[in-house]
Image (cartoon, rainbow, N blue to C red; front, side):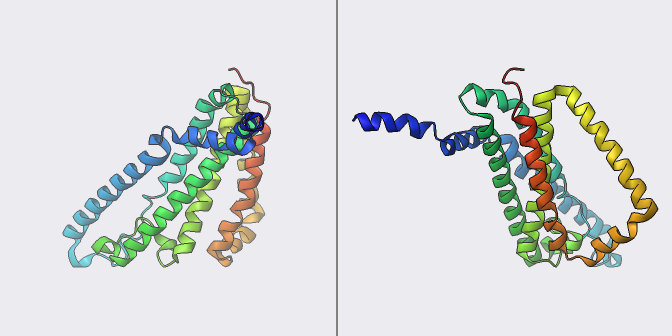
Length: 252
């Protein structure tokens, strides 16, 4: 009995359990990060089908066979989940610390939650892309879930494509949220100011001498290879997010 009394608090305070509690905290309100994106996605799907039907009706036989394969209707989900990551960090960080989660536990739990979310959405989109392909673009030759360069790709490539992009932008959202929690608006002003200078310098370099090698990289490298390069970037940004958050004040 005494041994159990000593073991139970240790189990409750174990890092794995605390990280799991942080993940469950994010799932406690599944509406913004889990449910709402699917509702928006299916609403966009319905609107795209209606638009395609109207165009097909009036264009008739003059419509190109691949007229509906270049839709950008799926790209919004990447930026939406980035904004959710920013909001989640700002809304839950101090709340979690108030329930005895450490900064490390909070960050790892939040990062794991968004990586699992990225896996869920990328797999779901991949399945819908297969259904879309099997039904000849919902009977109209359209492509919403695997548009343009993804149209003829395998299921694994489609899933990998969306997972890497969603994970990258979710981690960017965590980094921005962590900077706001630690340095508030001043930190974001400095960050976006520095980012603007970097982008300006990069644009100058591309126009002056860099477009040749960059263009060759994107035209000669397979899609999976290009996407794989986002993974180390995602890891670096995740580390920077932790560096920003590890000394964030527990009180605003």
